[in-house]
Each structure stands twice: as structure tokens, then as C-alpha cells.
Length: 123
Picture 1 (tube, rainbow, N blue to C red):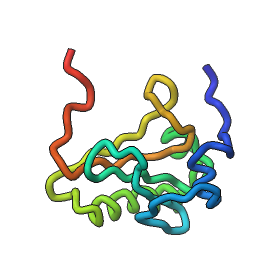
Picture 2: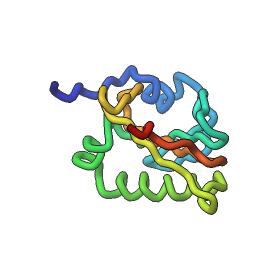
Picture 3: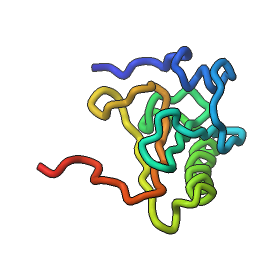
Picture 4: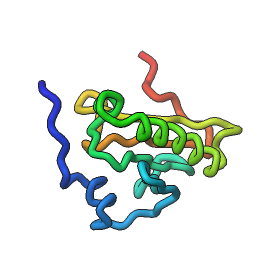
């Protein structure tokens, strides 16, 4: 299956345009972060690049060095500001159908604030 092109009508694109509000926790020239509307942990922040990237592989291949650096550093800053660094946290970036990606815009979930369950059930 070919990778689908970026959809400028996805919910994160609408949030970036200001068409849909969000509970912003961080913003700079390249990154926007906001609280998830259906949190799965006491801390659940979504971190998105402002560019039109569908997934991490798309971002790694096509983003500028400045975007990649800003995104990586923002995730660290946001995690520290959320107070989850000392006890630990989880980063999740779901990708396409098998990775269960719901929104076709690269996003990393920062989850923390409690001891999290195993990511996948043991088989």
C-alpha cells in the first residue's frame, strides 16, 4: 500500500490553522503541543510539528534540520515542564494502519504521571 499524501483537512491541521481550539502547553516556530482531549494518563500531551508530515519516517526524510532539532528539543522541554522526567514517561508515535495511527499528521504522545501499564500484552 502506498503512503497517502498529507490531508490538510485532518484535525491537527485544523488546530494548527486555529480552526479548532486546543489546550496549548507549548509553541514555537516549528512545534505545537497541547493536552490530549481524551487523556490516557495523568499527563498526556500531544506534540506535533507545524509542517505537513504524515509520520516519523516522512518527517525524518523531508523536514529541515531546524525542524527536526526543534521537534526533538521541544519533546524534552515539554516532558520536563510536565514534571514527568524524574519518575519516567513514555513517548508513542503511532504510524499508519498497523501502528493504529488515528490522525495522519505526525504526533508524539507524552504519557506520564503514574506507573504506566505494559505497552503490549505479553504473549
